[in-house]
Image (cartoon, rainbow, N blue to C red; front, side, top):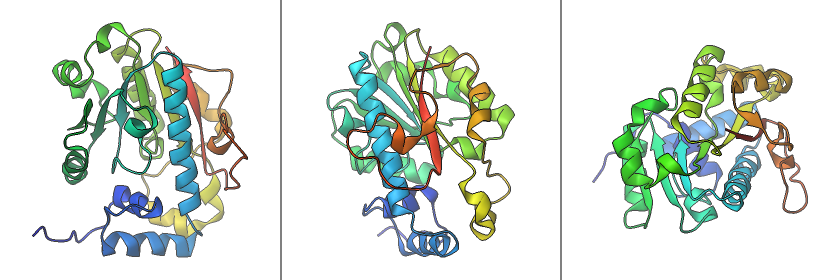
Length: 246
């Protein structure tokens, strides 16, 4: 029997907020402690996951059927392979425990792969891995999913990673992205829990970090307001995002 982890995982905390079952008491305790300093988080993360689904379907409508997901976390609760059935999807994460959990969850799912990969070093994933998981990716548009990660990279590292992603994929590829706006500035106790490596950004400043990527006419907006498929979710504007094209 696998021993329960002693430290919480952001990925498993998000799984808890999304209503999943791949988390442990230590993750629940950490999630509830954060909520005590900020407020309920489930609706916010469900809104972000809904944005991920809408963005993936939009990319599919644009002809994308190969997806590379960075910082995928626990690949359940409406992730890309469920939003776009039949697509080839490569999930990546830096945490080996999360990768192992993801592989176990996805075992036997056609066209879906989970591998170790660092969003800060996209080229490190390797062409052979991409060839195996996303056949034909060199000659057809790829959908890059980069959600929940920007806050953990400083401006220089983020701009470099996004530029490497641009170089990695063919023309016509698309990038779904988000970032943490200034929501936690009003909650210093919750902000302190995120640590010194957590980077919030003003929405008007984020576009420059995208470099050569070109944002669609939808713009960079609170994720609940990006192409809503029904009534706009009434959640704080904690995450902003959009889609950009190479």
